[in-house]
Length: 412
Image (tube, rainbow, N blue to C red; front, side, top):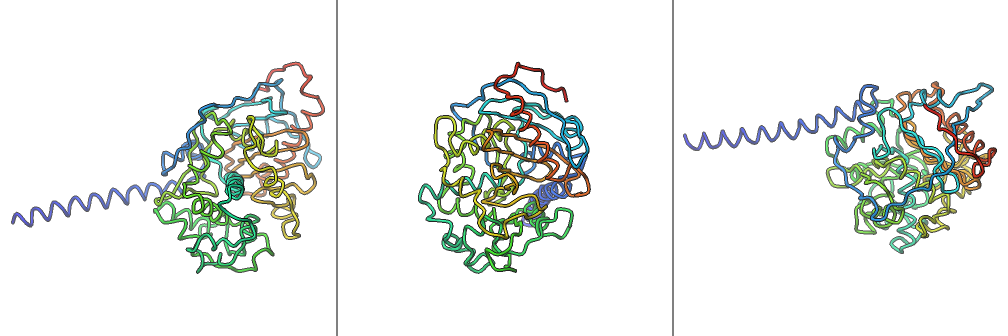
């Protein structure tokens, strides 16, 4: 009888444990499946680390603060003959924060929708450009020889996958040949299958290893977020460190980051390389300024100048005028084809870092655009957003902002 009572108690405890563990998975699955819902999107974008595990990237011991320049008003702009006001853009693109730097001076910074300067905001695919930079630093450090080596030379777990024999450069340029459906609006797409698996605690590495090749590597551009995950695996494998730890050492400290960042990870402690970074707006801006200055920032050459030059060199026809037809593609950077001085990091729902190398203008934007998957919605389209950023750049240069009298920031 005692045995039965004891056994029953153990069974009851195990049952509670099972329910508890699956309840947490259930909560995470619910959160993933409703991440972009209008009622939840701001909470999710500001506080993803409340719902999913994450590694903290501690702020710099010596934080860098932009010198304040002459504050500008945001300009109106024209697109296809129609005038759009800055306020309408901010409202219609569901902007949560916008910051602008010119010649290393902060000339605009505003927050909306309960965002603040210290709030970390999820990056989505802007993280891809960070991973590209980290990979370049690993190559500079000698951890990886060059981009013409194959990924499975360093990642034997991918030898039986579609990534077998694929060059690092082809993964960098989203030309891996892997079959992958990136449509967030399709419940059965690969990206949504990945997200549900992530919520249930499944390994991202194993998911990457399960993917199959459908085209010859290096011949077709196809946006595959798991390509960036493989790049993250390379950094982790060769450095022996978490992506977040490598970023802390090589990037976050030298940049003088003002705020802690977080990088969401799976149950095996592997970061979501292609989109799980959570960073405060001003630190997004610092990263963009560093790239704008060819890897030099805060008194140091942080990222090799040559790596950033290679990152925006487009030498293959299949990387030209891709996606919406307005951009080329480099090493995890979008490159507007009609202006070779521009680089753009782009993320789901309106996350952007715009860089103009010639004018030394950098713009960082965070948004929670609930219409991201609706390409008929004007403010979901990159050409419109790029036009607004270019209008800001033109406004700065036309007015010779270094000689402007300080003006009042537009109250948006």
